[in-house]
Length: 348
Length: 249
Image (cartoon, rainbow over all chains, first blue to last red; front, top):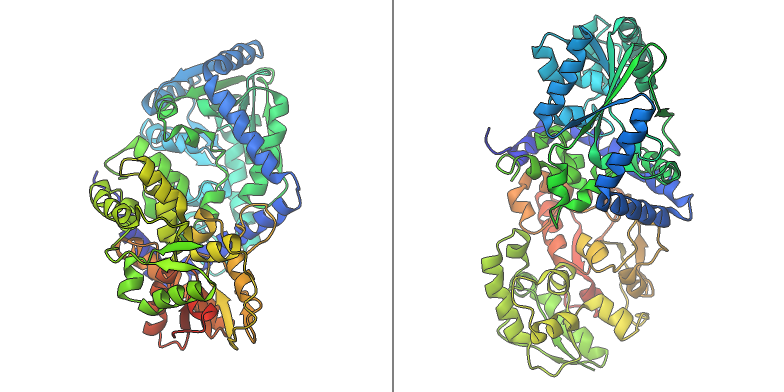
C-alpha cells in the first residue's frame, strides 16, 4: 500500500457538509474543556502527571524484571500467560486457544492492541464470529471502519448517521436518532449475543507486576460482561502496560478518565486476578514493535502513553481532520508518533 | 542597553510597518538599536519541514549577521522565528559563537516585559475593541502566556503591555489559544485544514465584534488576514508594536 494521503482525506472530511467536521470539533473541544475543569479541581494535577511519567520511566527501564514478576504472579493466580513477539504471533496464539476450545463466537471489549494486530479480520477469515461490545466500537464494526478516536471510536459520526446505520443493520427506525433509544436498540440487539458467546476478549489498561493481575477501564461495563459471561477470557496486553505495584495504579486511575473525558474515573475499573472456577483466563503479552521502540532515543517516551486520547482532543488539526483521515490504528498526535514505527512508507 | 534588531524575512517583505514600529518603539524606550543589513531568513520553514540542508545555509547566514556585534540582546518581533533561533537552530555546528547568539535572542514582548520591565503604556491611546492572538509558538514555545492545558497560574505578557493603553477594550474570544491554522508551510501542505482553522478563528472574532486583532506574531495574522479578506470581513490586524508605538498603521 502507498503513502496515506492524510491531507486529501482531511479535505474530504471537512468538505462533505457543514455538519460532521463542525460537530466533531465541538464535541472534542468540549471534552478538552471538561478535562481542564476537572484537572483544575486537583491542586496536585501536574505533580500527578510527573509522578506517572516517572513511574512509567522506571518501569520501562526495568521492563524485563517487571514482566518476569508479572508472569510469575499471574501464573500463581492460575492465569495462563503467553508471549507474542508481533501481530502475527499474537493472532496465532489467540486462534490456537480459541480452536482448542472449539470457539465459534467471541465477544470482545475495546482493545487498541487487538486493533493494531488486525485480530478481528484474521479471526473472521478463520470462520469465527466476532462481536464488539463497546457501543462506539460496535458502530465502527457495523460501518466496516476503524475506530477514529482511541477513546471515542465513532465520534466522527452524527446521531443521524448512527440512526441510518442501525436501521440498515439491525432494523430500527431510521428517523429516530434519539441517543437513548439508539443505545437501547443496540443493547437489546447485542445482549442476547453476549449470552451465547463461547469466549470473551478484552485488552488491559494496566498490568500489575506485584499482584499478577490486570485492570480494564470502561464506561459501559461491557468488559465485565465480556470477561464474566463466557467460560474463556483472553486479554491482549502490550508489554508497556506494566506497572510495578498496585499502589502505582491510583496515580494512573486518577489521571486516565480525567484526561480522556473530564470525568473523575471511568464507570468501571475492573481488576482481573484469576479465572473463575470452571473457566480459563489467558493473557497474551505482546511486543509488536514495542521493545524496538524502547531502544529508540527519540521514540521511547511514546511507550509512556496511557491511551487517554487527550492529545487528540487538544489537537486543532485532528479535530478538523477526523481520525479516519490518518488511515492508521492510531490517529492524531500520538498516531503521528507511533504509526511510522509500524510502517515507515505508509505513514511518512 | 544595546540590542540588534532581528526582522524576520516576511516582516521585511510584507509587513515593513511592523518592523519600523519595532525599531521606533525600542528607541522610544531608550534602547540603542543596531540593524544588521544582510538579514534573510532564520531557517525556520526549512527546519520545520526537516530540510536540514537548506536550513544550514540560512542559519549560517543568520549567525553571520548577528556575530561580533557587542550587543546585550538580539530582539525579534516574531514569536515563531525567535522560538526557532532559541530552541531549534540545531542544524548548524553549535560553536561558542552560535550558542551565544541563540542565548541572546529574545522576542520583543518578552524583552520589554521582562528585561526592560516596562508594562505601563498608558501614554498610548488605542480606542478600539481588540482580541489578542498569542501564537502557538509564543505560548507553548516561548511561554509568553500561561498554557491552558497546564495547571499553572494565569499570565499573559502581551496583555500586560496592552491593558493600560488608553481606551483599549480587550475582549476574550471563545477559544483564545486555539491555533489559527497558519503553521508556516502547513498552510500550503495542508491547505484545507489550515483554511478551516483560520475561518473558525475569524468567525470567533466576528462573534465577539472585534475590530482589531493584535499579536506578537504577524505571521499568524498574515494567514488570518488572508482568510478575513476572502470573506470580505472588516477585521483589521496589527502587530503589537504598531499599537504600543502608535503606528505606523
